[in-house]
Length: 125
Image (cartoon, rainbow, N blue to C red; front, side, top):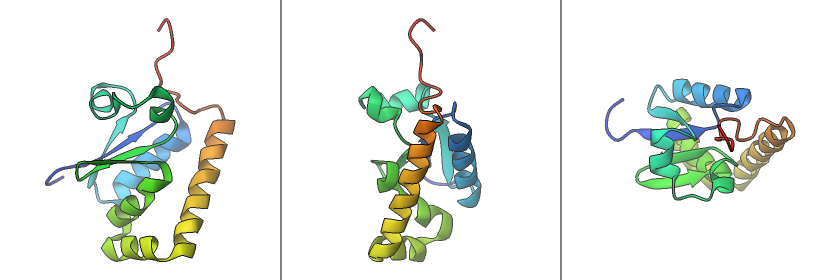
């Protein structure tokens, strides 16, 4: 990876989340470094974030900004498919809405599957 890496933080205790993170990194030709929500890098970037928000979604640190959940999708699309795809995603309201709906469906399935915050420290651990 060259330049300032883009960091994607994900729930390492959630199988679908881990799959999403690894596929994103691979599809972006390794322009993305992936880190669990917990651990030194997660604490460094997400430590000030309230725990419920930290463990509720994936986060993308890019260009000094921290984007979360569906708000991070346009930038992720740009990393994976190129700037033109990112511009289209941002500009085409139906495309953006479809992406948001897809993300929130995944989010609800993740919550229903009880894998949300699978790598969150447990009391007494």
